[in-house]
Image (cartoon, rainbow, N blue to C red; front, side, top):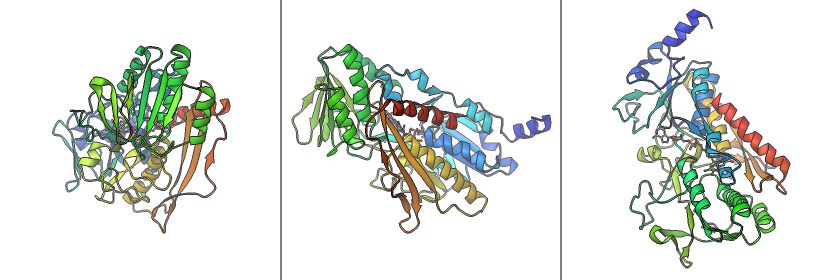
Length: 428
Ligand SMILES: Cc1cc2nc3c(=O)[nH]c(=O)nc-3n(C[C@H](O)[C@H](O)[C@H](O)COP(=O)(O)OP(=O)(O)OC[C@H]3O[C@@H](n4cnc5c(N)ncnc54)[C@H](O)[C@@H]3O)c2cc1C
């Protein structure tokens, strides 16, 4: 880079990789006359939209990316931690390469409030940052409110869901490993929609792999509120019957009403209580707190309604939302692959809106999801989604649906490659 370019970029804040200091972020870029987009959430959706806003605008949009976590932890592949095929540190990545390569400003903080009138977000320090457009990709929050035995309704202290890779994943792994051989590990699954539909069933397989090696008399009980397995149903049933006989038991229509942690007991709407040695309670979910508190969860008070062309909230203007927090289109799961596709499409739409160019009226992205079912085999499901102008939603392209006929070693390798390619693209 030439020295002059370096100085120009530095003054425009483009080389600031590190966490901004107070006051700095508020002033940079704006003084250069660049439109500013603030991205809240440095997960799958947020990293993608931040990168591609810079790419599509040829660096003519200033990006502040805000996330409290010091690093990015991938939930995809985190179930493989239970079978010792992955360690958490292999799923933990720095955001610095992305930040430096694309000239993002990363602020390590929560956003505590959004003021749509002033077009500002508030940080816990009291700092207020202006935006021209705001993007939220805050993921999900967990709803503990219905469990009367759980006193901490906000954090659900005591409940281990492990549906955000990190400390809870390790806590659950430790409890499973500490369980006596012959014990029962119970997973409860809420009524869909929830984050990554096949992941609880995949988890049962991964824990099963561990049990087969180290605790062969132990049992896995899946207690599902849904009438059937919500993804890859026949494949999971076949693998459980053939590969984990007598070990994995699936029970449908089990709606969890409460949890008694003092007695390791699950209380259901209809069926008798069930006691288990290790509980993995996956509560119902909704859009992340910042979206909920800001009045953006206008679908069933849980999910954010969006214009599928622009990702702009149907509740508040100039706020765009993507990823798990949104009410998806037809057959659209809450997945990293969808958050990634939406991140790119959203970046394109915001660039077009900010520079008054014609909108893409045919956004298109896909879902591709691998589930790891044994130590060496996996299976996938895929759908392509296209905007339907009449219905104003995303619809599955007829004929695009794919489902593996059986889990294979080849798909296991492809699943690993999917994750590596995804991490590479969103992090560098
Ligand atoms: C066990 C498991 C396995 C999975 N496997 C797969 C898979 O194989 N394939 C697949 O496609 N998907 C998979 N998923 C789903 C995938 O992880 C999610 O769909 C994806 O992470 C959604 O991206 P997102 O950007 O919406 O949210 P996230 O990736 O969760 O990112 C949200 C970010 O927002 C930040 N944030 C929240 N609130 C604030 C705030 N107020 N201020 C600042 N920052 C905030 C959080 O810190 C977080 O970093 C899996 C999930 C789990 C739990």
